[in-house]
Image (tube, rainbow, N blue to C red; front, side, top):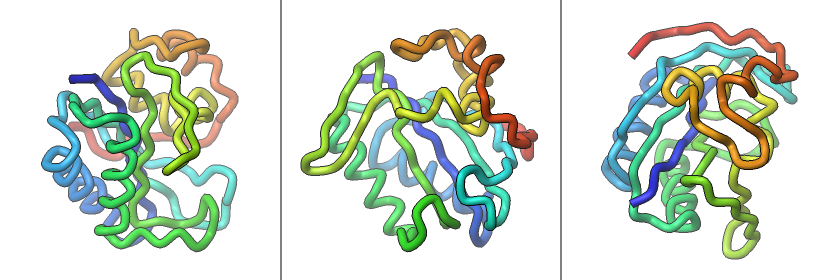
Length: 164
């Protein structure tokens, strides 16, 4: 079993329900949820002309391989109605693999997967909830989450929406 951190995001429809439904399906199909951050409301990044997001980080314990886990997360996104028509655009649900233990992975076949997530250390909407549930977690080649958070370049608005 491996400890894995997943980032969830939603900015279409009933955002809170979308996160809750994704978490239920992750728990049933991917692995047991060990910890769940509060839900944070965040400004969009990169593609700015879209509604605000709700974001959350989950820690799960899984026996799935990184590739199988990614495949299952993509399947959950599709099942919940995710359509990938605008890169970084609005979405019902987004599930990102942030960390899979301390493994460093770069694969492109059968799916593209880079771990740790290549931009997580630049994104306050990932680091705030991650620091809430795992402040002393070390991101390979980057540092301890709580210290990385202080130095993140992303200054977008991130505010607690709902505590767990």
